[in-house]
Amino acid sequence: MKLDQRTVVIAQIAAATAANAMTALRAAITEAQSQGIPKEEIREVLALAQEVQQAPIAHTDSLAKQLLRESTTKKPEHKPEHTHRHHHIHRDDCDCQS
Image 1 (cartoon, one colour):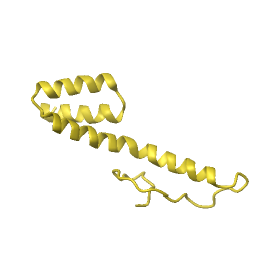
Image 2: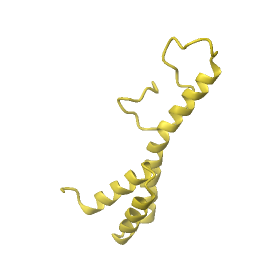
Image 3: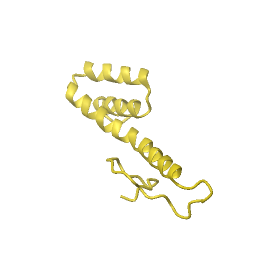
Image 4: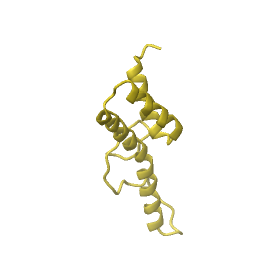
């Protein structure tokens, strides 16, 4: 692998956080601390990963709320609009239109 060990452990922390993989997260944070990575830097990685993790939840919640407001006899004619503001990383499959 061409990534240095520090980069690998930071990626492991981010991936484990976003995937809710508690055992992997425990191992990655323990390894990061043994490598001397400062706690504040680990917290920053955790915050970024949690932001990524929350984006799909916010989208699902917004869509569910919108669908529940619509009449049950009327089908939506167009793509639902975003009705809330949040920060997330935009991807090609993101339909938040912001």
